Image (cartoon, rainbow, N blue to C red; front, side, top):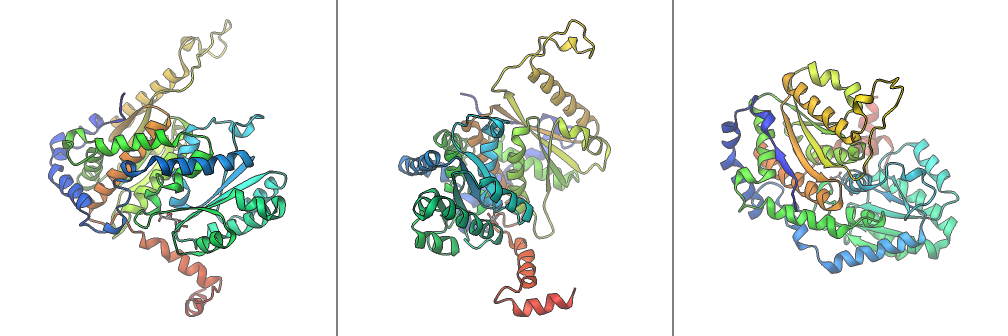
Length: 448
Ligand code: PA5
């Protein structure tokens, strides 16, 4: 069986290979710090050996609950924000039919997301859509107090109880939250919902392989055993005993730090050539943005969907400020087969493509873009993924997580906290006159 692999050949003209190799001792030290738990944020290392510690019983429990939701719901709403929703959405959308929504026959519930914004129109339109649906909710919040999620859940709980009755609601509402604290825990215990615990030592953006991600993914009908197996294999492939040049996470962390520190590349763009991967990029953006963007440091994580965005962002990437590098997630083999048909009249002039797979056209777009961007001054890394399935997504998830931990330590920050996220919340609560924020309310109003 193949594994995902990282190709950094197209970085060589920007940073000599020896400079990347010179990171070996720092990377080794960062990995040792992670393993020994002696670095900053060491109370949030539960993700490090999570894949190899997940038991069959735990997966069976998750699958049984997912089955209850699948049997009793046409629609399941995943309520959560940031790390409490992006991983699940990334995997579900990467594996789902692009037009699942529009298909008359659904194999399992439609998955919908809420609690990740405070848009009145969004929530009102969702309420309206759910009016005639048998729906259930997976309410995900580690703190149990996040405003966006709590607000959406309040609306959804009320609607579910009114439409389906309190008894059924109890069966189709599941909480994924802290073992003891937070309003989500209090509500779940009082109402008697089935609950799953988010371990204390796993931060939101590293939590996709906890019930935060696994329950929604199983509910959508995907194989969480395979996902965990892929992650577990990648845990071994990125272990401390693997030589630097063979360890993809070590190599990725070293290369991006070398580009940042020694070639002035301050922005990393994660690129895909399959629209299904859009939310993988969103998940990745949070993972790296929240982990590294602190102490006035950090590569800015951006993302584009190609070839779509070549027609909007392509100009900037080709010829704008030369502070960017790209990491392309390249899917080697598509899951389906579609050939370009021949056309007798050839009015569109496309007969030179007749008989070719659509994927071959896509691959040539990928290769052509890579060469053009490298010529234009954009270093390019490629993460080669044999195919889009649970197993390889598990590998991708752990590959990026491990690299993120190493990379944060190379940068000299605590990759596992997110103090900056609190600033907007404090102001919002003050502006909304939340009890306990009286002083802040006065102060902020004086500034308006
Ligand atoms: O990564 C993080 O810690 C955050 O993105 C959180 O996941 C997000 O803020 C949601 O928090 P909570 O799960 O407490 O509702």
